[in-house]
Amino acid sequence: MKQTISAIVVFFFALFVYTKLAGPIPFSVSQVVTTKTDTFTVTGEGKVSAVPDIAVVNAGVVAQGTSVKQVQQEMNTKINKVTDAVKKLGIDAKDIQTTNYNISPTYDYREGNQKIIGYQANTNVTIKIRAIDRANDVVDAATANGANQVGSINFDVADKTKAENEARVKAVLEAKKKAEVAAKAAGFTLGRVINYSEHVGGGSPVPMYAKAEMAGMADTAPTQIEPGSSEVTITVSLSYEIR
Image 1: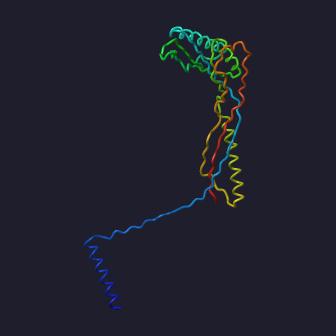
Image 2 (image 1 turned 90 degrees about the vertical axis):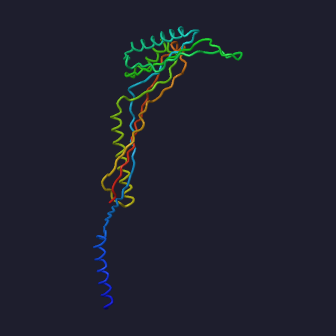
Image 3 (image 1 turned 30 degrees about the horizontal axis):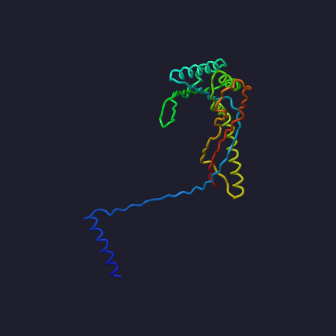
C-alpha cells in the first residue's frame, strides 16, 4: 500500500516538474456529429402536343455558266426574284436571311489534265413564315421565281411556355402518384420534398424534307404541306424525406 502511494506521489511530482520545464501538455477534444436522412426519389413525365405556328423554309438557286460574271449575275437575279416574290406574300425582310453564297470552278479531268471549263454558283436563303398558313404559298412562289433547290421545311412553336407549363404539371402529378403508391407498398411515410429537378425535351422543329432539285416545279400541282403537331416533354425528379 505504501509502495502504491509512493508511486502515485512520484508520478504527480514528475508531472509537475515536466509541466514547469516543457509547458502544459496539449489536450483537445473533437466532437463528430453524424446525421442520417433517408430519402426516396421518383420521376414523372409529362407530354403535351402543340400545334406549330411557325414554318422555316430553305430555298436556293444553282446557276452554271462559262464565267464567274455570268453565273453570279444569273444567281443574283434569280435569288432576288425569289425574295421579292415571298415579300409580296407578307414575309418581312428581317425574316429572310442568306445562309449560303458560293461560286466555284468546274473542271474537266479528261486526258489526265485539270482544266477549268466553267463555273457553278449557289446561294440559299432561309425564310421564316410567321403566318403558317402561307407556307405552301411561299414554297410555290419561290420555285415559280427561280428557286431550284428546297432543302427542308421545319415547323416550330413560337411560344412553348403554355405547353411546357401543362407538361410540367402532368409530370409532377405523375411523380407524386408514383411516390404515394411506392410508399404505401413499401410501408414508409413520405415527408417533405427536399429536391426538385427537371429536363425539358421535345418541342424541336418538325422537319419536312422536299426534293433537292425543284426544276420545273412551277408547272406541277400546288404544294401541300401539313405542319402536324410538335410534342413538348418534361421529365421531373422529386426527392422526398422518408419518415
